[in-house]
Length: 343
Ligand code: PLP
Ligand code: COI
Image (cartoon, rainbow, N blue to C red; front, side, top):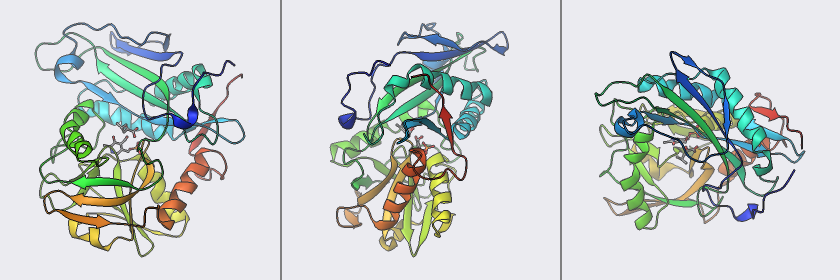
């Protein structure tokens, strides 16, 4: 297999062209065959519902090259289910879980030469998306949909890598509405977060940590990732209808239990920030990253954690998660699927 000329160790979390993407279209009331494309473009009707009314959902999952050379995809069944829930959340046609999984296998197989080597710190990011493609001017759901899965090799999401990152907090922004679309993964949520994210970047922070959109009392989403805190051997994470149910967070909660920690999923009042020994943020892109500082822009108050290094619990959680993904630790919960590729 022809290895691409990529400096895997210095890859950012960005887009790199790969060989193929896969597509599947819903037309005449049924899903068609999975098609392979080498084009980076999509032909769209000028009145397509995705362009006008944001009928768009997406997912993010990763494939890893293990020490044994095998390629493992992490928990794609969970992404398939969330993709289905997101579709239903904005009146789109849900893609059956089996087709989602088949598309993931295919896009990984076809781009296997872009799965970064073991130990590089990079992985193959798989980005499924679904769009409403039939023409609409009245505000109502499309009747035709297209699912596209692309794959691209990515490095760390935060510029600090595994070193603690700095985030800021402000009451001036809501990511989503209290009874809105926060618990599903629609493109519109990310458009609505861009100003807050830009503000954080402009001030030198990696992301904006939100408080709940209703009362501004409880910790909520952390940029495009979940928040968690550690204290007294407990892993504490928000239970909030405006937070995306992160598959990484779900996995870390299981790992925390496996490591003998308590797990609490509950409202976390802002004041509790003073009491955590370690805090972190987690997601497919963010993995499990320690937060070194949370700066409250409104009260000009800084919360500091650790001494420039990730704390012991976050380090253990990270190592365990990555160990399973790389095939170095036993996959006791059956989270990884090995993708067989003729190389
Ligand atoms: N929260 C938001 C807003 C996200 O975009 C993501 C990324 O998918 C997450 C949390 C983390 O979810 P997961 O661990 O399933 O990637
Ligand atoms: C992910 O972690 O997969 C995400 O979707 C977050 C972000 C890159 C949008």
